[in-house]
Amino acid sequence: MFKNLIAGEWVEGARVSRNINPSDTRDVVGEYAQADAAQARQAVAAATAAFPAWSLTTPQQRFDVLDAAGSEILARRAELGDLLAREEGKTLPEAIGEVVRAGNIFKFFAGEALRLSGDSVPSVRPGVGVEVTREPVGVVGLITPWNFPIAIPAWKLAPALAFGNTVVMKPADLVPGSAWALADILHRAGLPAGVFNLVMGRGSEVGAVLLDDARVNAISFTGSVATGQKVAAACVARMAKFQLEMGGKNPFVVLDDADLGVAVNAAINSGFFSTGQRCTASSRIIVTEGIHDRFVAAMVERMKTLKVDDARKAGTDIGPVVDEKQLAQDLDYIGIGRAEGATLAAGGEAIERNTDGAPGFYMRPALFTETTAAMRINTEEVFGPVVSVMRAKNYDEALALANDTPFGLASGIATTSLKHATHFKRHAQAGMVMVNLPTAGVDYHVPFGGRKGSSHGPREQGRYAAEFYTTVKTAYTQA
Ligand code: NAD
Image 1 (tube, rainbow, N blue to C red):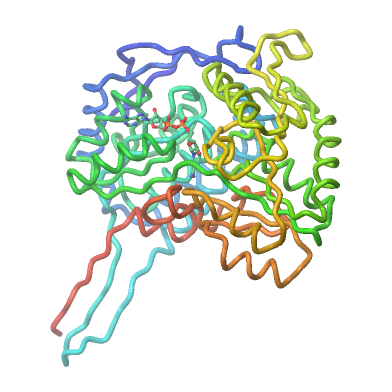
Image 2: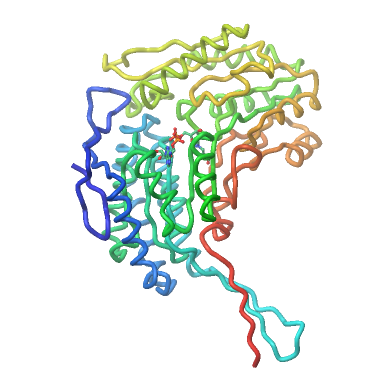
């Protein structure tokens, strides 16, 4: 049984949850402790007690721990990637890529601990010096979703610890394995007791403690809009700092002048890889008239070649959906799209068993065509391998359709026109814009996040992460 880490001790939970492999539901990845509210409060107490000493450690001490953790993650990429693919269902190459990203994030923020700097500013008053410095925020609560089981915990944890905060982390219930592995690595890397606490458990119970406990100074949340709204309301009520990364309904525009191969590759990757379970997935493909029919035909041909199978099997392009509930939601949207009058050009069927006969939550990726902006499949986040194509008369109409959404995470375009690419980068209402590339935010050293209904608060990742995980102090000195 995998236990929670509270005040430097591995402790049993109030309940146990079974982590199930969505590629083969007979396979139990492990049994994981589930904390209750009282244990979550103990974790907050431990982080509160550990903060004064940890906040005054040297950057070298923090560098050493984070760098060691990064090295171990990278060295164990194959094993941790296998665990991740087994518990979440993304393919093995995708899972190993995510683990490598997590390792690199720890290495990057090890360096950021040393690079954190402030300003020294001349005062308007003679003989006075002004310094602007950054200090840790305090106890930080981290609440993470299931679709990036190691990268998202890493990109919250690494900066939190690098800048001297202490942490209580609640991972998603569906994927505790990768978060537990991370806790084990950090524990052995030499973090003092209480600096990092892992409390696996229910959002409504463990997550709610983090939102409501006055000792938690800041909350970093990634997940759905509905939960994000609860996080925001709770944090505002007690004036805690918070940042939210939430859903998307990301557009990918294909213009007449696009290279067809580039457009199809980017659309297939953006829409279907990781089983479409990425917040940056492109689920609305907006195609101008001159290339529309050729693009749709090429997509349908390419989709026939996609192998839907066990996530850990060599050659699998698309693994299973994460669980039964998500699969039911994806299939519901197939019915909704049809009922709204969209044409199902390819896929959309559930597959009950993989090629080895094992039961799992599989479905064939789906492409809807002849869809309109008002359809629910174009306004609501499905969070599965379901993509719809919309026609646009020209670039201007395509841009307007791309921006016609309450979300604003990622936005992509396939074009060979410098003029349109340049215009799109400036006018796409999204936090991340991709030209001739899939809409995934791959680089780990640059900011990641959105605008409009997708995000709230300072950006994550890269050096911009310091905005959230530090607070600024302005000090005046009379010499
Ligand atoms: P979710 O909102 O259901 O859960 C996210 C986390 O919040 C989980 O750990 C959950 O246990 C916890 N939680 C649930 N209820 C809570 C409550 N009342 N109080 C405190 N915590 C609570 O989301 P999910 O299904 O795990 O993830 C999928 C969503 O995440 C999608 O909408 C996706 O777009 C989004 N996502 C966004 C980004 C981004 O960076 N923008 C990245 C990945 C995923």
